[in-house]
Length: 250
Image 1 (tube, helix red, strand yellow):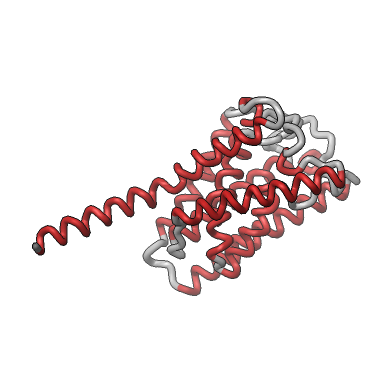
Image 2 (image 1 turned 135 degrees about the horizontal axis):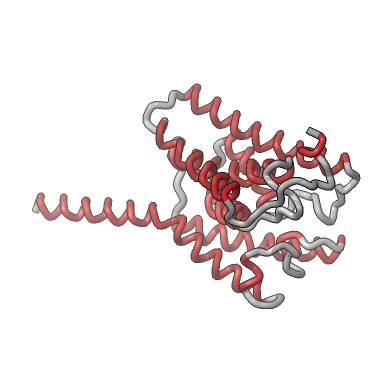
């Protein structure tokens, strides 16, 4: 138990796409699609229980992280404010679940899922492995962001639109400018707007600063389109069905 919460972990280190990593990713995928099992049968009461339960997991899991960091005297405004995309969407996703905010859903569906997915594929594990609290907390936080949006889409019937993508792009660029000002003011690097993270990430393949920021926006656009693809296919099928129905009537 001491080693589980230890600051200086000496257990089995994290291995990118090792068996533990793949199992953890598989669990997140299964949980993200599990709302399909109750999509047509969940009562209003059950839906509320699930939403509030998932929001509680997001909130208390993140609070535990801050307690752990503060216990070892490592908390600082340069590293631990909820300004990174995934840290921000832990709280926004909880708010979305509690209030059923469609505006937050639009942002969380694209930014939350895209950011959390990238983090899960290339986690900043440091020296920690899955036998340690840090990595388990990391996967619960980021996995829950994805599950929250998938639940709202599958069970609650929320869906993004083309306008949502435009809204998200405008919002994230305004946020990027704001965060860059904050970074310059407090000597931080939220959103990695001033330099790349030390841990391996997708940004390593997107060129030097500041060009990797523009490249990242291109990658984000592709991910947004992939996330929107199921709805695009559904809309095209519905349009084709409607056209066929009109032609038959004529």
